[in-house]
Image: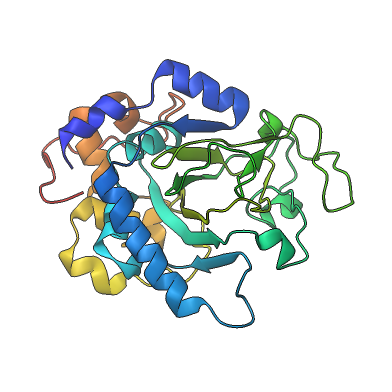
Amino acid sequence: MNPDCLQHRLTADERAAFNKDGFLIVEDALDESMIARLIEVVDRVEARQRNDENRGRLLSVTNVIQEDDAMVELVSWATTFPKVWGILGWNIHLYHSHLDCTPTENATAQNWSVAWHQDSMRVNDEIESDPRPRLSLKIGFYLTDLTEPNGGNTLVVPGSHLQNRLECPQDGQSSPDGAEPVRVPAGSAMILDRRTWHSRSANTSSKPRKVIWLGYSYRWLRPKDEMTVEHLYPQLSPIERQLLGAGLANSAYDPQDEDVPLRAWLANHDAAVAGGSPHGESHSRPPSMTRGNNTGRV
């Protein structure tokens, strides 16, 4: 992993904003070249998945990492991944991926309704604490301009990640108090705490909306989709293999150095995170300092 990514580590102000609002906007997360590569992937998948039944409707496709090298690169992208380890620590993997395509004027093509929710579904029914634990986050990489509020923007309620329940109108069209659209230019990313109440929205603009979502969690949380990535392992670096799920099941609970090469890399580059949890507590044996840097692409 290129040490240059360290300039994008989570700052104290960013941590405070994320803890307060439940999301964080990363401006200029993607350069124009990467945006173009990813749009090509999204367009290819959409062309394959579109049919008469879903034409004009929101298209959401999961398990998309294997679609292109650009998707693999995005998992440890320099402007965003350091913020992921800054929030969750080193015992992490990618547990979910999907891309969304919201065509133009799609509100007239389907019976659109807002769908306010926290991510992880049954987790929110079966964990009893209040507030519930974070457990995971996801990053939305916005490939198209969403600076106006009518383009299918993600809707969020800032600060709602600490609320297990949200009072919301039941008409399918209205939003709860405090809701706002995420308005960002193409190339921006949003890091979203899974507990933050959010919703899709209709695209009544003249431009399609294209977003790629990557979900990161602790390695002991089961993947949310198929994660068809094992065939990629031979070409990946050790840290990439960790992020894409390599390792025995027990290593998620009692990781050794070889199971979590990210920890060894951080021991040399971001020791505060490598030594324990991102919250400053040490729960695991320290990494071996003899393993040195991992080489190769990450």
